[in-house]
Image (cartoon, rainbow, N blue to C red):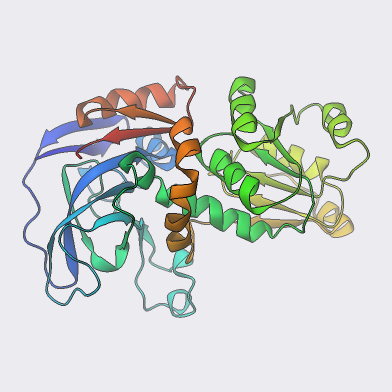
Length: 338
């Protein structure tokens, strides 16, 4: 079968490999239908930071159809359409036993510590798959995982009713967070991105306003006397995070969901005196089923957000274009099978 495998930093290849063996007890085999390219995939491609196996089949955002089931698997059947949970957690450490599987002490991710979804077939533990409606477009079902990440960040921010909120970074997670906020929150939504056109696109789809957060007077003019207490950063940019802290009035919080490079220079007295919370948001806890349930009502907007590849052969070139910033869309999906 065909698979896209990461050999080293900047070395991604399309290979012909053996199909998975029959699933052992507790596992299922899946015919992959669609898979998404994530920002963390690109980070691993650029830096090799999380390469633990060479080569490994990349991809942790995907959906498919179950083709075979191992002994002892309950609640799933051959032919079920499913989305994948990306988190490979131990289930035994104190974090897992407390229900916080997203901060498992041995946490790894599909596509890194085990083969992922940029392949025609994949084998996963049955606990990492969740059924979705058969009528759901595979291009949308493949976005269940990043939607769960965004939902976890929005839940962590815990916005009071009516509060304005600034979403910083209009990539996949920023855009999906904005889309969720447009349905789950009644306050004013603002979007800021270095690419002004992308911020305007996301704002239009989500019913918000694009602003330049680097211009405080523009933010103040839009707020028209209201306070900005809450923001969500999906960039990981040290500069953007610092600017966000400067913008926030007292009594709110900044949710951090981007992958950062470097260290933040911050006077903690600012957080103390303004009572600003910095909230780290890592993957998701139990939000994946809720994210899957939301997909049908978000399908139209999710398709507007996405660009589609028609073959696994196109993935390496797509990685390079995305690393170079050559896309106007929020998510690139590769369609693999019906």
